[in-house]
Length: 172
Image 1 (cartoon, rainbow, N blue to C red):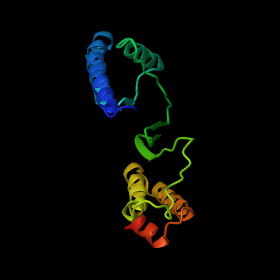
Image 2 (cartoon, rainbow, N blue to C red; image 1 turned 90 degrees about the vertical axis):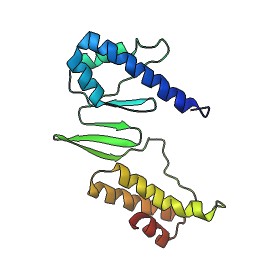
Image 3 (cartoon, one colour; image 1 turned 120 degrees about the vertical axis):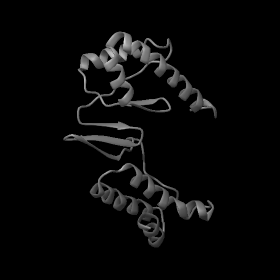
Image 4 (cartoon, rainbow, N blue to C red; image 1 turned 45 degrees about the horizontal axis):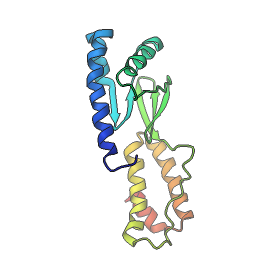
């Protein structure tokens, strides 16, 4: 994002705009809508996510209102009734519940550090564990987790990681 303090600026700015939006939402949509909005609105830095139960027209009205909060900051909306990426998570609606999977951008080559590189050994040893931990943290379904760990094993073998290190990193 540029400077070291950019994420702090983003957090403060969007936090300020959130507070400002609460007042406007109550004026335009009412107190009940405001409470629903606050309870379902999630944010990481300047990336926002909301589980929406209202109409498409209401979503468009909300987006238009959000885009009046600051002259230079504009919100975009990506919507889908069954699934959406958010950061490195893929959020999937199943019946009345939510599942999560790992999300990779189309440009992600999934090329990890070669084990034969000149990096410190402790850095290379931690990679299988860290990548597996990321999968475990994000993926909600065991079957999906198993599928992704098998893919991870193959990717790390391709990068010359020892099988024993991969197994220890992934399976403990």
